[in-house]
Image 1 (cartoon, rainbow, N blue to C red):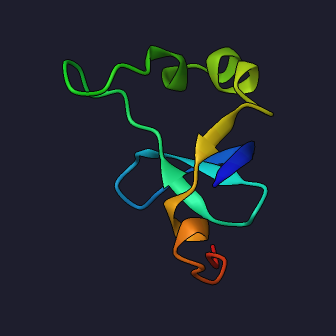
Image 2 (image 1 turned 135 degrees about the vertical axis):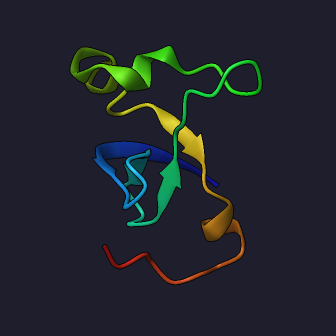
Length: 68
């Protein structure tokens, strides 16, 4: 299910996590060459992605929202 990004925070390993409108979360790492998300490394880049959508597999599986 496609869900909008509402915010970001860092996890305990210092990796960026997107907060979704459904209250699930999803890691958004910049880890070339496998994953290219250079925008996640700056405040401006993350702000530019607010409101964009990610596929939420947790919603597809009908999992309860994350508590963070």
